[in-house]
Length: 550
Ligand code: GLN
Image 1 (cartoon, helix red, strand yellow):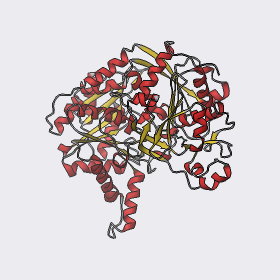
Image 2 (spheres, helix red, strand yellow):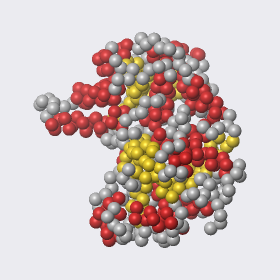
Image 3 (cartoon, rainbow, N blue to C red):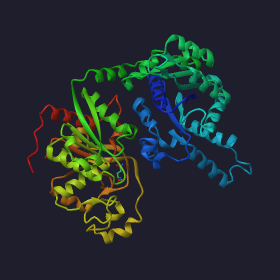
Image 4 (cartoon, rainbow, N blue to C red):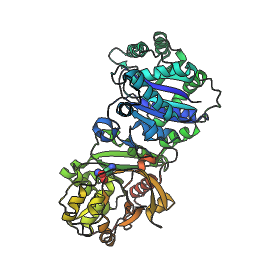
């Protein structure tokens, strides 16, 4: 029988509800429980796939190929359970879509379809389905208490404690406790108000997690408890941590998981958090450091590349390397050249859509290739590596992806339907077919790696599975010409699409059509990121042979 922990947020957004949920999941897992995790998102989009990263940060792709909220990435980095888009992320749009479909089918037998009970029932059913048979399901409710959009979700989770009994439900509320420096005072009032708001809709939180800059003094803890009807030891102080992976221990040491276990009448073995201690220790005591340039488009918004940035740091944890990530706007390289890359020990071009900065990305690849700087290209980063090789190694002038230039004489990257039947890749043959194409390749698929390639050596296997999120593919009609020019197609999908490329005549140049960052976690690291960071270290320490001058 599954019990539920609901995590709501108050005062302001961006307090780290996703991380709090993920850390609680990690601690409970370390106490021998099976965990499932769900994110409820109050916005009306059916999924975040169509939302700009500027709006919403990264789109996290689950194993089953669903475009979901970036919090699911936090969950997968902290807990062992793999989330599925189908069962781990529900938006208002998705809930309504399903209710409306049922109404059209006549499932409601003539009833007037209303928010309560039909929408709330749908939410409860979705949560129960998503919980599966885990011991505890952690359910994070997006948005902030008081938002109009969140109301049906809050009403549904309120009902769940009535339906299931309060010994199977825990309410955790995350709030902000600001420090007003001019008055040298810590303010508890926003927390009091936020809890009041929550109680006005019938939810009395059992645990408060208070975000603040510094640990919460005892006096404020007692004051918050008194005003919010929460026990003082259930007021957890989540003060700013210099390392994300310190948070499980920070929360555990204040008894967060004990309070949950007590309320749910669970008799659990003690938590073994040693894995998190060793991760923190590895980050704190590196044996070297590297500078890595991330040449992208959404560089001002760190959330847009959160899984990738984390994966690079995981590469650092597993090689005892401090990884300094320098976010570089591709457009700047286009405007001012590649000088900003001169001190870098590694260059990453991440995934992306749209043509802004594309030339800058191609220039970054060229610099990496010619200077012998380790290069890791991801999705669009692989496509630009192929374009660069086509132009500058194979002499295919004007080579481009049809995403950015439909008239290119050499569509080395294009929609499958644009090149599949075209032997020459000519524009005429492609145009009609291209109207048919355009569906996204999403989720985990099997990939075969070329024996002896850097990819196969890094993974230690010739069969791997990684997640995808893209539309355009390397045009197979150009493979021979690109191979002659020195590019190795080291990974192929079961249906013969290019998954990985590398350049053997280079210290470390690997790019993938898939997104390895979605399967990286701090405990295990990831072979590609580990290999890349090791190569960056060798580069920095001068051990890498520079490639020959072209
Ligand atoms: N825009 C490219 C495509 O659709 C790359 C996508 C990505 O990098 N995720 O194929």
